[in-house]
Image 1: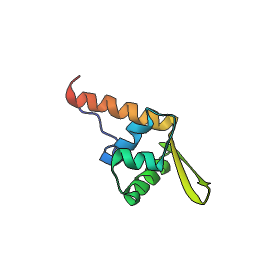
Image 2: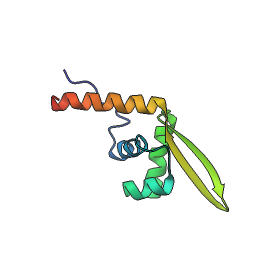
Image 3: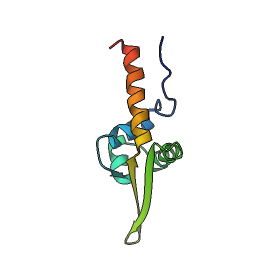
Image 4: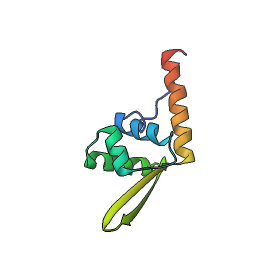
Length: 94
């Protein structure tokens, strides 16, 4: 029997964001945009969805006059990612 895949993480861009954040302490918006090749608008929407699910923590500040957004994965996000990977392995029969 196949385990259900987390629909929030099953989105390509949200999975990419979580995959990046799982391997770093934190990442800023520009870094995530460069690594995912996403548009600013789409990245912003997907970050909001992950934040509302408490998978990531977002902090916003200003550097000079420019806004600076940083993202960090939460314990819930780490657990959800690990659960997603384990479920995916079941699809691959590993």
